[in-house]
Amino acid sequence: MSQPTYLVFRGCIIDTPTLGTLRVRANGALGVDQLSGRIIGVADQETATPADLVSTWIGQAVNSSKVETVELNADQFLMPGLIDTHTHAPQFTFLGLGHDLPLMDWLEKYTFRHESQFKDTTLASSFYKTAIARVVRNGVTFAAYYGTIHVEANCILADTIRNAGQRAFVGKVCMDVNSPSYYSETTEESLQRTEEFIHTVMGDNAGDDSALVRPIITPRFVPTCSAECLHGLGQLAQKYNLPVQSHLCENPDEVAFAKSCFPKQKSYSDIYHMAGLYGPRTIMAHCVHMDDDDIELVRQCGVGVSHCPNSNFSLSSGIADVRRFIDHGIPVGLGTDVGGGYAPSILDAMRMAAAANRALIATRRDARSKDAESKDAESKVVEAAETKPNDAAADHTEAAPLNAAELLFLATQGGARVMGMHEQLGSLDPGKLFDALVVDLAVPNSP
Image (tube, rainbow, N blue to C red; front, side, top):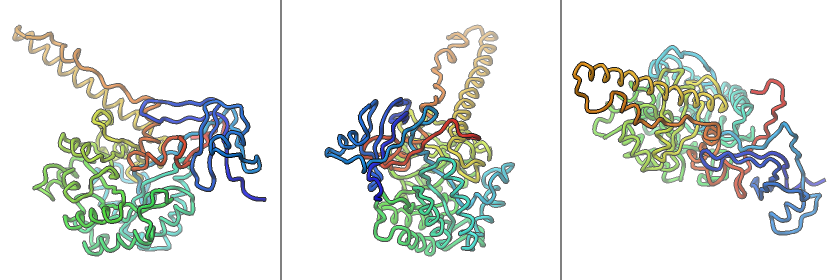
């Protein structure tokens, strides 16, 4: 018996097509062409048969034998798959370790040593199966992975992801300076191996956005990359029309180190920009300590921000101001940043993002209160204040806390925008790739 060509889901369908908009089709229907993997149509409320729905959507009669129907029960709903815009596959080996250390010390003591072990392809083959399975179990249908500097291990990672049926960007990490002798490469090796990895993963189809697994240009971050390496990677990104990922303004010491490596550049962001690594398909993780120049350049270039609140808390890096990014029109998605973050769960990232946002609001409120009290005390001594003591606080318009609809958007459509794939997925609209989850609220031990 032949496989049905079309799949129709009937029941509750939820997505967030725009920031803050929760679209709920309580008794909707959604059709998928199983050959292309794309959504062919969505209905808000339909009583027609699945075959009639498909016929309407594709504009020609379809026999019911070509249609498979999935009836969602009252405890289930269909939603877009979760998108992890920043994670490190080899760092699952030391998940949760070293969170008493700041970023730069943590990298030296744990990260580089553990990642260097992936020169062993046997380790890569066995470990990546476990790690990717864990990510998939958390409902992540699309992720941006960092690998290691090793081409063979990265190819194993890409194959493992593809075999698991997950969509992904996979990056060969590049680091040619300020790196330990046991885990480093020359500039020439870094660029040659990156191009080798690109060809191995994609062959001659590096620009195919619909491919399940694609390479992504991955300078680790500015302190471990020379100017020549960064420029070379920028040229590869343009040559093969590939996305780019790296880290930006995560920790004060890292920011100072990066600027000391490139003292002639105006800002941390400008270092990436001058190398040709900034554009609307660039993902910058963390972005906690952004000055005005960083913000403006990121905005102008259409760079996306991967907000990683678990990691930012765990390594005491700080709190990224997501509202500031949104207000400046900067795309924002969520990342788990394993192993800086201890949970490979975007659901956890949503919760952490809400907590970080509220903590930032509370911190600023308390700072204004103390400032107002200080000014009040001064005015009583001088007895000549031009304004009332609390005018500054009264005139301040408090940023609204991130709500549930906004958080879901960051985890789905927002993440797709950061990955440069918002026209392909992230919401449940006709023509988009069907990367989706059936959520069952009655499942025991649900996260």
